[in-house]
Length: 57
Image (cartoon, rainbow, N blue to C red; front, side, top):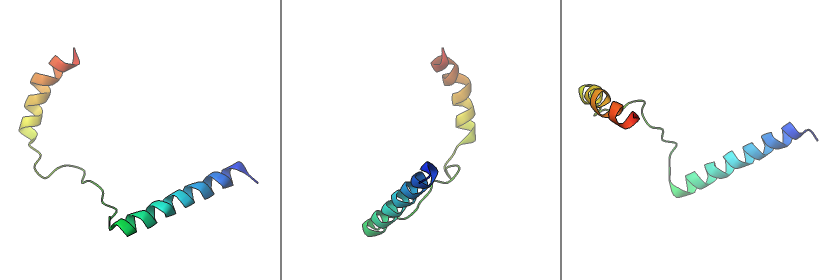
């Protein structure tokens, strides 16, 4: 047996297991949005200019 095939089978079994568990628990495949709706660009810029250099030291 090819080692690559075994890994693919293990990955498929792992994915299937999590799908079953997620379904039984009533969970969905939620993924976070790329950016928060409440994101405040001005506050981020101010933080990056004042706090980040201090933390980076």
